[in-house]
Length: 153
Image 1: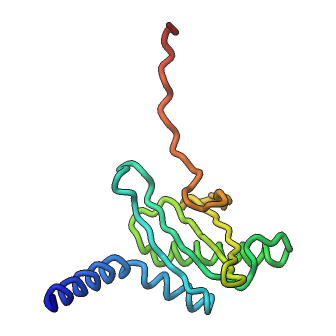
Image 2: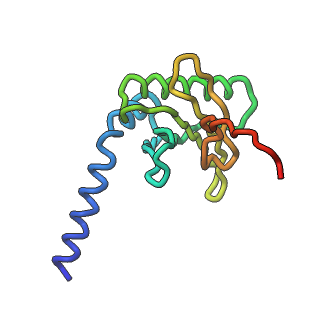
């Protein structure tokens, strides 16, 4: 039992170390820029769907309410997104990143949270777009090939 516990711990430590190492420089840069933000950086491509884009997801805790419509709060959220985008372009934690998702949340009380998510295509001239309220998936879809029109039965 003792050896099994050591092996399981070693496996988990190795897996998480190898999985998170590429994201550490970006995560540390975000902490330096936004102290107390507790960023979580993760990304990649879904293995089940080989033709999906490479997505980098960044979750950041904020003292500013991301759902607020106050001009100062809106400007703060824009600044945060632009800085995260600039750091991502500079540090390139994943090769071939096609999309960047930024999830910002503010903890109010023990059981309350305010959150908002945005995404941007990592192409020059792309604009930020707000994601759905759930923030689970990007609303950007790749164009599908046109269906051939045939006779209708």
